[in-house]
Length: 198
Image (cartoon, rainbow, N blue to C red; front, top):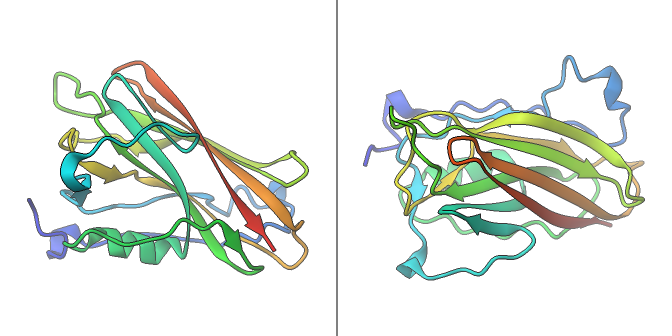
């Protein structure tokens, strides 16, 4: 396994906070909501004890391909913690305050290799307001488009939906969805998670 701290594997992340209370239609050309992160090669995590984890709304598996959608506070720190040699400890963001900087991330395992050994997986993100209306979506973002990681390891996906809550955002429950597709295996997983803005 490569050491993620070597110079050739330095983290490259560009997080541009987006306040939810803005009219994003004006900013889509300049603001990147889906952030592509260069996570170090080999920064995979094997599930503790290889124990079976059942499917749920935010975590599913089909045909050997599995994904887990979580929302975290301070996504840049989450990515940095993920790259450390020890297994990262984190709690999904379920209740957040105004001004919180959040990121929806997908952790996956088991994407199918093509004959060249390359994984070809994408994610479609969507964020919904408490009233159920669509706030923003980003489709066809790269979950993983390179050498396939060990199928027994969890890998942090390349694309993160990054956003920041603003002072005029609706309080209540926000819903985040991610459709994760392994194009080589022709398998899609529809994931959903929620957080509450207080």
